[in-house]
Structure formats: C-alpha cells, structure tokens
Image (cartoon, rainbow, N blue to C red; front, side):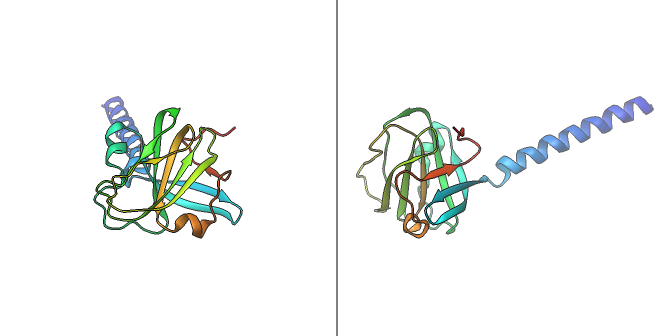
Length: 154
C-alpha cells in the first residue's frame, strides 16, 4: 500500500511539473524578448507564431494590443518573406530579422487592412510585429538585435 501511494504521489508530482511548465510557456501565450537598440534594452512580451496556421492568422482581427507586446514569427527556413495587413485592424511596425537576431529592415506604420505586400528586403528567419510607432519609440534601426530563447545566439 505504501508503495502504491508513493507511485501515485510521484505521478501527481510529475503531472504538476509538466502542467506548470506548459502553463509557463503556453498558458498565457507570452514570452519575453529583448530588443537591443542605441537607446537601450527594451523588454517586449511576445506571442509566438511558429506554425503555418499561426503565421497565416498573425494579429488579424485584433482591435488592440498592449504597448509592451508584439508577435514574433518564426519561419521554417531563412528566406525572403513578405507580410501583409489583411484583416489586421491596427497599424503595425514590422522588424525583419536574420537567423542571428539582427534586424535587417524596419517597416513602420503598416496600413491596417491593406493587401499590399511588405517584403523583407533580405533573407530572414523571424519577423517581429509591434504596435505602430513602437519602432520609433524604441529607436529601432537596421543592425539592432533581438534576443529571445528561440533565436540562437552567435
């Protein structure tokens, strides 16, 4: 009986650890990225878009987004990409980022609901979407760096 209780307790403990880890990563859907610019380090809570479905939906149909948040898109391979604002209700700044986390291009204040494509201008692995005006507020320029657990550090 004591052995059965110990096994049961260990099972519950393992489930609690797995559940806590899942909630920490996916429970609220946010993790922290750090944008390093000439004006300093800026912490940004990001929602990850890592599947074809989440990349296709992105920030569509959202009426607002907190000032300190964004969405970080991760693509399966490094390549030129193009984004658009279809069904996106808020203006966005887009940072096109290479595999090492270096910003290659910044597109500011993309027009809501526009079907115009916004090219990366270079092969990239990531795109960070922020509220329109955030890039200027953070002083973002090509050559700046984004740090996040999904971005390997050189």
